[in-house]
Image (tube, rainbow, N blue to C red; front, side):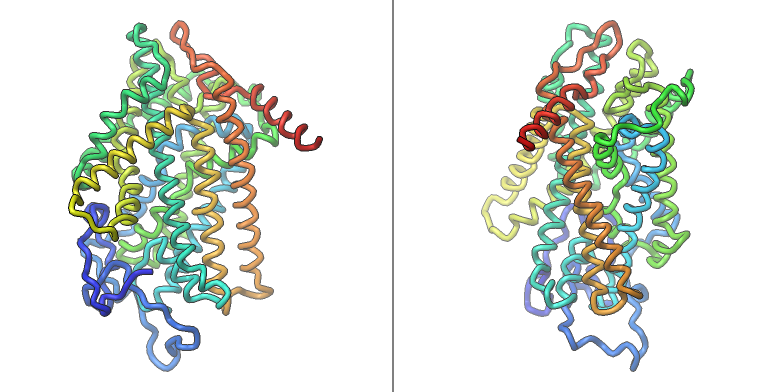
Length: 512
């Protein structure tokens, strides 16, 4: 629980992440400089009388040094949502089929967008109740429970810890996935032009340790801003060339499955949730807007951005599976021809772009880890900080070496982390925020959020189970083999026959 400035606590220095990100004005309250995300819990029964005096407007009181326009916010939302998850959309469609993939992607987009919507809506309600102008995701969860019904107030600290822990695990796992993507793309390039470097992908992962540690040692995120712009350029060029290959000599739609096995749908949903979820950036974007109310609404920034993201993801997923069918790889770039310079340049560009992006994703984990230990004083603060930096990078590489596969890894993160962060937590926040009033006729909001939690729990359980089975299958199949410039289907990182066998064995043992 954040402390109040009035109690004599010293105002901490801005963290590196705060220096890099645009100020969101959350350190200001009633025009006075204060501690970040300062808020006051309003005891039950002491709520201000909003009818006897003018309504307090949190957005009129918000002080942001460099507020963003609606267009700028939309650009940032698109940039945050269109990540490396787009490379795995074709294999998601391989699991669902073309027709089911299109409609299911739209369904996931609607659910994810709605959960982001209710998170921001609850934040706006809590701004007025607590007279605070901005909050983080963790703050919204904590304040909602602390100001909610009596049965939930004791869970406020737990909710905050859960959100922070989920954010840490999400971005930590994402960093490991990025490492595998870099290594796999470089492996294909080196095998093509330097056959003597035909080594296991784990060797490439180990060789990446030093470059990743170096980017993890960058003292301030603002130094990575130019690198981030270069990464966006590389990713844009790489995706453009990839789409060119996808639309060249594409087969007939009738040659592909229109629907996939029901047992593979958890894999589909987990990958799509990982790709589309942007719940971690929603509150920072809203906090920095010139007109925060424009973030919501039927034609608001959130709906516009997610509509664009959905169309792009459907396009890449549909074309990728249509082009390569059952040979679709976990990262669509791995399907590109290995004997053409343009295709190989895509893999280099994607690898470089992901490497540059690794630093930004990594800093989220670093920020949470540093904040967790900053209360413990030490004479060697700088040494401790760089020890944490190095340890986190080494841990992400070790995890990547242990699970050197892309699709099951992405699905596991989507199922285990984003199901909690992006689906279950926002639903619970809305329930406790409007428990006393605002549930609607027949308390329809309660039933709606119960359905969201059920969907999230199903995605969590089935997606995690399926992903673990496929990760187990990695150790039952040989490593990817590249022969005569073509990759075998084993480059998917798992073998479906092995997965079916493992699944059947598990079910039979359970029944007997």
